[in-house]
Image (cartoon, rainbow, N blue to C red; front, side, top):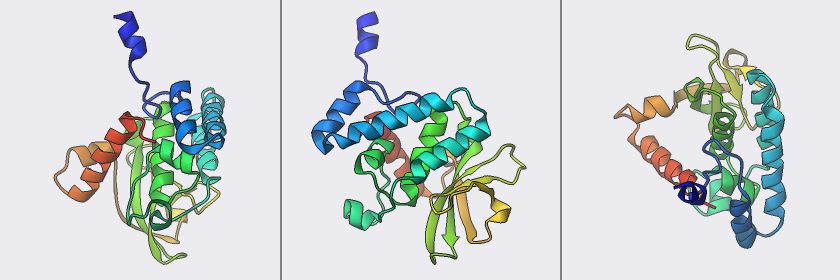
Length: 199
């Protein structure tokens, strides 16, 4: 039984850091530079463990915002692909959904309650296009903090006049709702790929 437990695959973005086995697999597919990015991610997790939740938000936001933006069409030859965090780090590029997904799973790994984290669709007045951000609610009634790849600082939603909210969801609302079926399907597909450590 003990040997069986140790032989089970570690889900890199489901409560754990990225394992050596996953790094070796990624290196075979993407080359050596991917390992340095995965090691940097693990180091970021270690640095975040002893700090406050607000500080965790900033550390995670800064870490992923350093990755260059690239549209799904250019990156994946698809219109709307939700990359796993492993894919996002391996490619070292992604669009707004990819930043949000990676930040969500990293914060979940660091013990932030997923019920506080919402995937928020907005329209960006600055770029005149749909956009996604991660919203953090300290309490259900609070003005959420916005983690955004196009903004260096984390600000409250009320201070982001450049963003027009469309709708938001979190794991609870999407898994217990029959609405937004396309989003639900994308979330289910993403979750399965995260559990398989999809590269």
